[in-house]
Length: 269
Ligand SMILES: NC(=O)c1ccc[n+]([C@@H]2O[C@H](COP(=O)([O-])OP(=O)(O)OC[C@H]3O[C@@H](n4cnc5c(N)ncnc54)[C@H](OP(=O)(O)O)[C@@H]3O)[C@@H](O)[C@H]2O)c1
Image (cartoon, rainbow, N blue to C red; front, side, top):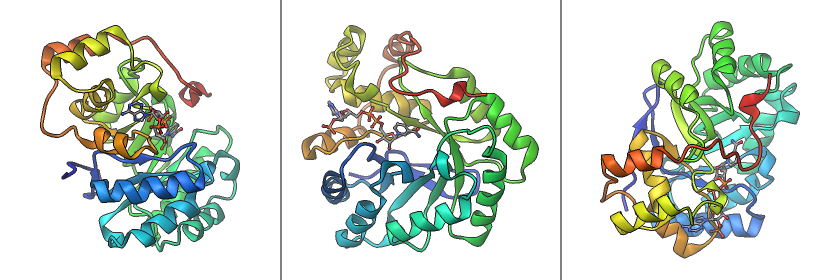
């Protein structure tokens, strides 16, 4: 399985599918990453808040795959934003890595987001994060950052699937060359039995989960599906040799219903 990649605004290319490990216990996370790397994944999405960075690091080391071939993203915990540099080094230590490929502000805490970004710019300039970005930023949050900083975020990671499309944010990101990463692309498995989704799945002869991932890829987003199940790992990455038709994409687009699964920090002030 060969992953496609997308170009970031600093010239790097990011694999278009990443394995999400939110709410995966250390053991599940370790095993899932070992299996995922065997299946062809080359991109892992973790966060300090997930408390499994150490398991991610161990799995990468034990996989035997060269570090340079694996894209590792982690995120700055909202509680650590007044001590960003120390939090970043703690993540590196837990991951047992010399650098991460992408470091994100996990969510736009009002009091600390601009200062945290300035520190993240320094981390980027030091070479210890190859790309930097944000997560859960609205257009207003992004605008504020662009007005007060020198480096444009490479990505904005937001909750994104046909049931929650954030078109204002995705349009803005596109206009600024910011790649959008779709988190909870599978709706946390809550909408997999939606009738329209099932109808499209039947028409392409793929599973609802595969259709949701492919919808994001065809929109130009990076997709971050989470699974700790070896069979579903392969299912979720088997999305590169078929397409959803324009007509079926329109049907999926019509599913917008502002369906937030857990939190929506894009609403924060
Ligand atoms: N930046 C942020 O604030 C933020 C917030 C949330 C998530 N994320 C990132 O995005 C990743 C994915 O989001 P998510 O974990 O919220 O949810 P998700 O990927 O939308 O859904 C995961 C759920 O779907 C199930 N699943 C996976 N593949 C499946 C398949 N092929 N068929 C049926 N069920 C399937 C999983 O169960 P099994 O594991 O049992 O397969 C799990 O219950 C996270 O892990 C994290 O990396 C970021």
